[in-house]
Structure formats: C-alpha cells, structure tokens
Length: 143
Image (cartoon, rainbow, N blue to C red; front, top):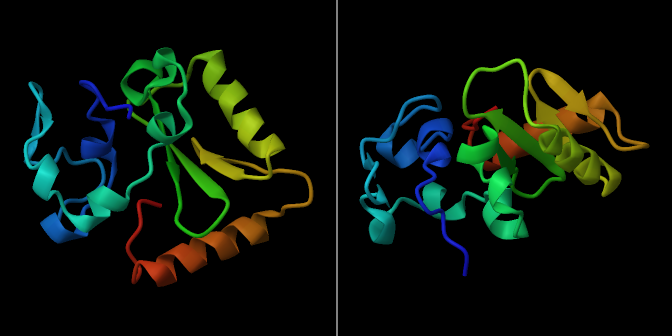
C-alpha cells in the first residue's frame, strides 16, 4: 500500500472536528520527521479522509506537497475538492489535466473559486452535493 511519505498537506488543509482543528491550521500532532504523530490512534475524520493521490496511484509529481494541490473526494457524492496547498496563481499543467480527466469521468471539481462541471451537470447539482455532505457531517466540511 502506498503511503504519504513526508507529505502533510491534509494535516494543514482539512478540518478535524474531534481535535477542534480548523482547515488552514496545522494539526498539533503533525511533525516534519514522521508526519502524523498519532497515526495509529488518529481521529475518525482523519481515517475517513480520502486523498486522491493515495487512492488513485497518481505519479509522485502529483503528490499534494509536490504539485501544491490536494484533491479530496467528498463522501457519498461525485464532487471533488481541489485545495491549494499554497496560495498561488499558477499551478502545474498536470493539475489541470487531472481536473479535466475527473470532469470527463463525470465528477464536478471545485478549485480556486472555479467549478469545473462535466456535461449534463449544473452548478445547482454541485450545490445539492455540497448540501448533502453538510447534512452527513452535521454542517462541518472543508468547503
């Protein structure tokens, strides 16, 4: 099984309700030497987090800390969040290729205030997906 290596993008970008950690705040259990200091006992929201780089077997240069974008699958819907690791106006063209491939497979992708939609899907569909996620997570999400 693939592992994160020294990438800790999710430790910064995700909300961890169980630790009262907001998105954009580095998790207090994150260390530069080993990543998650409580990995074996990490909270449920961390265990359920789905990083596309890990799950999809993407090449190393698309790891979140390398391409500066973390792709997160929202649970139970076809919408994907693409969260910038750093504030930047430009990203590797491979990031946009990945977005296009996801859109071609029927997923909507939210990235940098833009919403990339597959054919036949409207912004209203994406909003319904987001509302569904918020209901599932009792109003908590990284959105």
